[in-house]
Image (cartoon, rainbow, N blue to C red; front, side, top):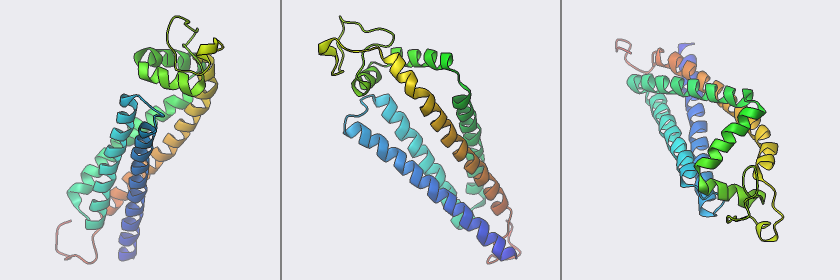
Length: 203
């Protein structure tokens, strides 16, 4: 029974961390692909996504090594980091799901004013110019600009942002609960004795 429980916890923890490794590599790959093909020109956005992906990769790698070797110290720090990530991710996901339309518009305007490169990406992809109104005296990368047929971007963004926030919030909540599951698996596995180890060894 002890051996079966130990093996089950070990395999569950390894599988969970392999999933996190795959997600982190996917995040890094999508961000690099978007930058390479010019879909996203903002270095801050790409760098932020890649940074989160690299952080998740190293956390998952630490958890995987700790699970395979039943390393007490590594599992302890992995459990603490994963719990902190859970708190942050759960809070952000809940905020994404709870935010109303007026708050969305205010946050979008702040983000719009803080990044010229992001403005260009949005104007090009949504074929719009300006946030609340089209400024004819400025340059705009949208295809509609030379014909003076562009609409402001705010309405077009708000049509999509609610769906995106619900999607991101839902995915975030799902992964936050898998992180809590990972914390529980780690705690349970860390306090189990390896049946192959010396029974008198301190664990």
